[in-house]
Length: 388
Image (cartoon, rainbow, N blue to C red):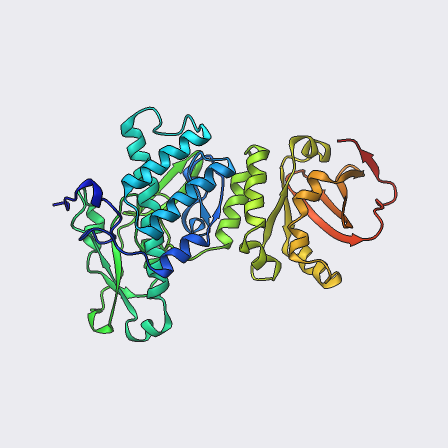
């Protein structure tokens, strides 16, 4: 039977056996390291990418998202009830004139939407904080096994989650990668560290898979795990970059630019600059006029691992903060066209910056090629200046 609490007591509790779990350092640290990411849909990013990004579906304006972020942070840090969060939510919606959001047309819809935002951020930050504690090397020496614990206090328990109750596996068993709770909206399951004595040698549960298709994209998931929840909160960087790149194709250039700047200004880009992430990184976004001028199908400008490694080796004076100016150089700099596939930008900012980008032959991608600082702002020979 669900626990009955008065409205004033309806604050977050991971176990469901009391009023409010006091926030702990790891929980707050996990939430505060996130960056604001404007999105159209809650699943514009999925799974472990949520470790690095704070989103509210449909909140595409930076100041609106920042206010929501502050309200959630306060709820976590101060143990605010859902009623207090709803009051903040209403004030933020009124302040920004936010309309047309899912649930805005009825009181029940507003209550549902606020509970999703409140519960999801509370539970994932709690789970990630616990993940940090559970993977502490000193704890793992003594308690290297984890036990799945289902909450019997939920009103509508999931049968598979109930069947996993009491399952004990080593902390590094692959099963936890997709089944570390929460495993869906409203899931109150949790994990407890236990000694090897509690492991009885049973194999990890195998309940089969199912396929979920959303907006033309199909994802294979373990049964019992909701779409978008097949990860252990507290893991990822590279997955976030990959998903942002994929989701930007076909999105409005304004949203692509906001997403790109979020990533470039975060410590994720610092990791990429320092060689800790492979692949490609979205460093800027073109408006539709520049994309057309370049003859490209994409608004996103990518920086490859090879390009930045080569450039850092040849030009160690260029810093990560210089690369963070890429969008500003593209937005404010003088534009020069070189041939039909390359653009060069010149911007005076104490020193001259010169940046070059090029589209691929098939027009599917744009790459940021070079970034220089010098005393003279001279375009390459044969370049044609383009009026903005």
